[in-house]
Image 1 (tube, rainbow, N blue to C red):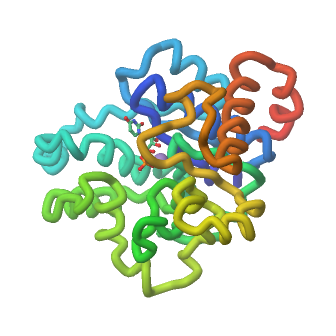
Image 2 (cartoon, rainbow, N blue to C red; image 1 turned 90 degrees about the vertical axis):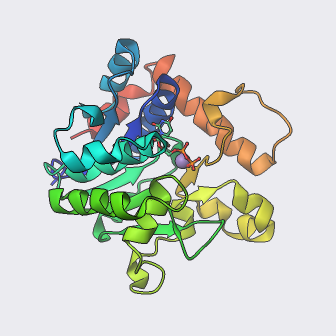
Length: 263
Ligand code: UDP
Ligand code: MN
């Protein structure tokens, strides 16, 4: 089973590779039995790629530019959608029957393998507009047919927010009303913005968080590890992120028990 289901993330730059490393390490720490896969673009350095190979089961180079597909080529004239196309490339990973996509700016806090019991497309509400799902964490079924339909949808309608989230929400437009089992609890994609928009709820439910998402322009790796002044709850997640990052890069002591859990 572990070979047929996988967590997937994406890194198109060396700094997002830092995030991807933490995604993989935190999944391993909590004993996932599924494969852990990263998609990278060819510009990612050899050094970053080697670092990823030490922690991921599979590092897949995704070169959207080499497609012979006419549809792809017409879409490639829209550079603003570049990352989007790279992300939806995850639907082509048909060696897996079901996958969970995690943004590279997420941190896994406990075992979340139960996500594989969900069907496509399952995701948590976006904190900014809860009738849209946030595309930082979602369950999907790889399928070349779906991939093609997504590209066709992008060609016809573009993306209302210029990114993958707008495209995916208009493609999976039934999500807000059709099937409550496809609504992941918010604790599977907890973002800092919930602290500012509904602090009492964060205080009540935040300790159950399963996946933290550092969404927005400031990423854990884009500022000093000792950043001060943020909300103390988020600071805790931030320092956890750095601890996970350092456990990978500066010490191998934590690796042995995790490696034994790898299947
Ligand atoms: N991403 C990437 N390179 C980029 C921007 C984004 O690899 O230059 C990937 C990465 O996996 C990232 C995801 O696309 O987590 C979505 O982007 P981001 O997390 O920055 O968006 P946000 O969640 O802040 O809206
Ligand atoms: Mn993100």
